Length: 194
Image (tube, rainbow, N blue to C red; front, top):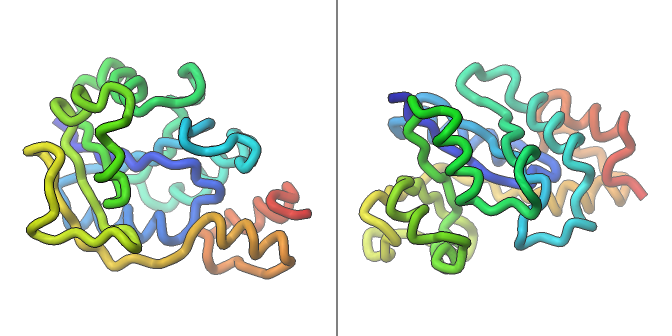
């Protein structure tokens, strides 16, 4: 079985923090590969704040093209919207029965995962790889939502897609906060600009 980590996100835009986390998990976990699941519409985010899904998918493809163990996945583009994690997991498990999928989540999600659609099925059938998020530290006393929860402690870059979008709107040149090729794509397609 191939052990595959799934990193879900709007990737609006993808940035070097996403890739640093993914790189760490490939090297310090048992994952064979890591898939970036681009969510066209997250049920917890306002769609008007998102650039068009095909742009976010293409930026994710550009960002991941140098690492053969990374894969930009568009499975949620073929599912009803908004995207619910359990529907995506079921679909991927059906398409790829030789993969053992794990869900990569930030520690901020530990407090809300019980409210996700079909959360019991997620916790019963899919291991969780949890990394700390600012303001949500994890340690040996942090409750684990399932017996298949593993905590990781990667070096984190405190960069957000919101910061990048706002900076570009202000005319800032933020080329080195996004992976190679992504900044040129943003500028050439006039994304996040007023």
